[in-house]
Image (cartoon, rainbow, N blue to C red; front, side, top):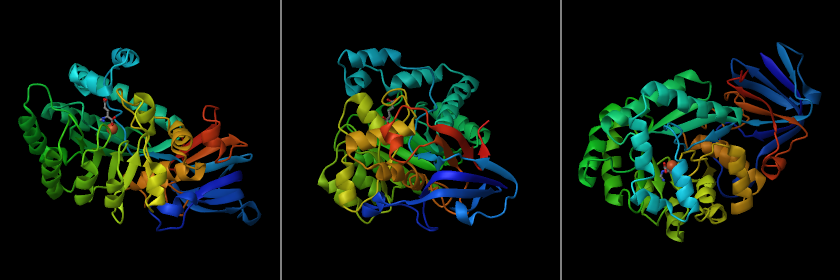
Length: 405
Ligand code: NIG
Ligand code: FE
């Protein structure tokens, strides 16, 4: 048993059973001032104002006026990768676009070559360091995709590394099979789509979700339909890369297959917004990619005005978003997408958890949920998080109720 007392702001209180926020709910979250929160067996056992504080039992942590909020839920990352892509960073500065770099054999194929030359042990070592960096920045739940293997052996190597990370860290880890990230070297397009489908029975033993990069120059709506149809009997719910490079039809095919999320959405028309209404699919925007690639930011305000929720995720990867800093993602959401701090906060906590199928278990201050919490330094408020977006703010991160060591 552990109690955190003298909390200046306890932020993110949500009633049991609320699994996501949509429309005007995006602007709401429960906040208690001058509060306590109790943790038992790694879960939140109670909370309230300091004047109703129960008698001390177990360890007491004095927040000294710091804020407590749920740890960030990052529902879209590619943190299992080998080496780096510095050369492409220079190409980009010199004026090449993401598509041009990919056409020259750079991009995802470059990472695939690097991964092929890296031992599984070394890949694990490099990748878990990124997961640790994310936890230190306040992330408590991480979705990790395969997609740099681009061959059956390479994809399985990545999925094993993701499993090993999941077993080695206190953060929640969800694994996604993204065989259809780019056509692997040596395959024709059709051969590769068949290879992605053929690996589904084995990949399903290691992954929670299936993803396809449904976009111009990568995989078509019809490829995506085939892969998702084949994945269904294995219980792999889709999370789709859509509308990053073009209006791709990925949103529509994702919703038709009851995708848990459709991600990127830098380029969307009103038709995509209409399609998402009434669905169980979480539109997920990745402002770190928009920032790094210099492409449009998602139309978050239009989605919210249409009554939809949105999640924000980091997309941490070596090509389009080399950062897993969720506070920076919040800041971009506010500054570039005109989200309010509360909307951005809901997008990186409860709605991110929903986009990983984890919102019954984490992503808010709710009795019974995992005590995945950030305790800030004194004086921080929710508005300051994205505003003072580079000042050190974390005092301690608790995952399953235990501080990170
Ligand atoms: O989400 N868009 C496709 N996949 C990644 C980028 C991967 C890479 O460039 O290595 C993304 O942006
Ligand atoms: Fe991605």
